[in-house]
Length: 387
Image (cartoon, rainbow, N blue to C red):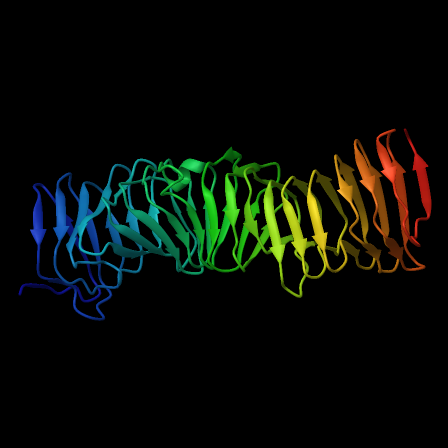
């Protein structure tokens, strides 16, 4: 077959008409690169071994059959330039994909794997019926409007998005987000109809002053961590077995949570946790609080074989109840910790409450529909009847 020998040089292909190269482009270990110019299409249909950069300055670079550019160190698309993998046999992998606004990646029904060896930003459009996989430890930012219809899977590193359209235009039946070992960083406010599935422990971060809501989450046996100072909302339930709130706000609506683990079902380091509806049960502690926080419970079915709520040292926390019956045990075991309980509308508090000598529990019965039921010894320092 034919060969292009690059060595450590850059080859510029000026496509004045559509063309196909079916030979070997760059021998094994060659560090040269490819610059594609010209408005026409240039197709690589053979083996490509070069490790230098691939830049599409104009027109379209297409891959066909088994051809791939996975050894190319970086792939860059300029404005109005395109990378087309729709004619590949098994999709394609590219390293460090970057693209200007107005650039395009055409998937067809193929799978694009982006290996982020360093942080990168893609501001163009990814289109087609295919799917996207994010690998590599670097952060990849999608800040364009994408229309691809398939799933998005994060295997490594972080995928950064600022809108639901960053993840394509598919309906929620075939365009779910899959957390497969990587993290999602959200730097915009938006609502999504997608479900989020966890195939491994995963973290979702929401930036300060941002709010992002999703349809459902499904964590299986894996741990879901919420971080960032913004708010994350799960609107329509799902299932979870271990959740950690590092900071910011997390709202869970009609989520069924069940844990057989030794660790607590809900670990709250800092922030605001809102649980509305749903069934919550744990073999051991239900909520373990290790930092200043607020817990709001409304119409939640709670079962816990351990402590319903446990506070560690030097924690100031507020538990607010509304339309809620709770008999979960409450333990303030840490030193210099304060738990303020606000029993609101249509609430019955029947919990056994115990604390260390160095900590404080304050109870506020907020109106005439707030009830406190004492069935055995309980530790409360101050009781206020505001109703």
